[in-house]
Length: 355
Image 1 (cartoon, rainbow, N blue to C red):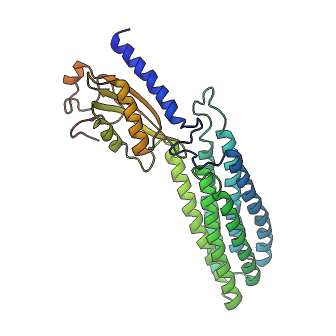
Image 2 (cartoon, rainbow, N blue to C red):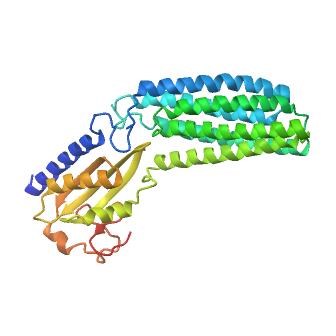
């Protein structure tokens, strides 16, 4: 093995070691920046979610019965929305147990993305229910059935109380989880929907304008579409291994290459493992006289402090003399780095360069 190859392997080994230390946080459980940092343990999270599930599930069953008795589509749509809330809580509970399993075998990240699967399933369910409820609401606008305004009003007011209690319970859990945050946002949307349903019940009771029930349903549909689209979009970004929405990879690359004595950064990848856990890997070249070990440590601290990225794998090497003349910006139209054969993504160097 040449001296350069030995240095290369040594740096790669140290980079992984540093990434493991940084990625696991100060307490060994990933509770550093972007992790579960509010001090509530998983058992407490599950307890709060279970209480919220009991509240939602119990009231949902009562609401379906009353909605049928009162001929109120608004109440039935609220119950459908609560069903998705209950499903999201159940999936969050399952995902939390799966995510807690240690990484082993082919699952080198463990099952941390189980919560992203639950969030996407919940978002798709919301969108499908919204389509059905929108159809029923339009049909009832054209041919409205009689609606018991008094029953609708009383049930909606009770629903407001239940949703406030459930939202408070979930707010006590770890909302950095996309699945938990999705359930929380759904319950807040459900709370607004119940307020709209209460208003429609009051209008039907006092004026006899039964179309108000269908209009309230359409309001619920809009809330469901908004929440469902948001969950599908965010979970889709994670499945496609996109960078976190608040991080610009080109800006990160330029920031790293501006650090003395770094001369080039390529093969820069930034992705999200699961909610609130971003990861980064890159190949960094430094000047021949630079200290590779020190540069790696400094870049890890920079990434953690400025971008909240603590799970990093940095391969740091000395730039070779050949690279000082070969591969200058503009000479290779593909931007390929001869050191790595073909760089995946932009090559970041000092001075203007293509992104």
